[in-house]
Image (cartoon, rainbow, N blue to C red):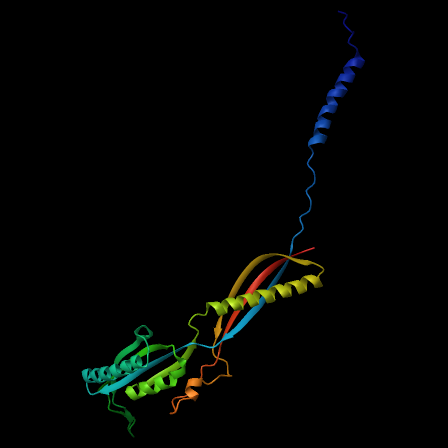
Length: 256
C-alpha cells in the first residue's frame, strides 16, 4: 500500500472542515422567534330581565296586648284572648304550619311621673302599677280573596294588634327563570350591537354572574274580585303585583 505524503495543504484543508462543523450545527439549532400574542377583545355588559306576577300568599302578624294589676292576671287575660285569635285563624282556613308565634313578652307598667312647680318629680321613683302581656303570631294566608274578612274576624276575636300585610309568590322559581332568560337575551343583543359597530363578531362567553329578587307591589293595584262581591263590607286589602327582577353581568369575547 502506498502512503500519500502529509503536506501543509492537507492539514489546512482538514482544519477548515473541522472549524466549519460547529457553525453548521449552531445554525441548525438556533431558536425561532415566537409569534407576538394578541390579547382578546373583551366586552362586559350588564342587563336586566323583569317579569311581574300576582301574589298568591299574604303574610301579616296579629296579636293581643293585655294588662292586669299583677303579672299572672295580665298573662291569664292575654292567653284567653290569644286562644280565641288562633281559633279564629284556624276557622278561616289557615293551616297550623302557617301560624307561628313571633313574640311573647311581659313587662311592667309604671305610673306616669309629672313635674312639680319646685322642679321635683312625682312620684320621685318610678312605681309599678300593673303589667302588660304581649303575644303575637306571624301568619301566612293563601286565599287572598278573603284576607279582609280574616282580619276582621281576628279583631272580633280579640286581636288588638294587626301589622301587614306583605305579599309573596309561593313558588317564585319559574318567574325568576323567565327573568333570567330575558336578561341573557338582552345582554346577547347588546353584545351583537357593539360587535357590529366595532367590525367584530361575538365569540364565546367568558363569565356570567347575577343579582336580583322581587320588588314590593307597584302603586297601580287591583282590588280582589271576591271582596268586590262580598255583601258586607270588610277591611279593604289590595294585593297588587310583585316584580321579579334579575340582573346579569356577562363578559363576551369579540373576535374578527
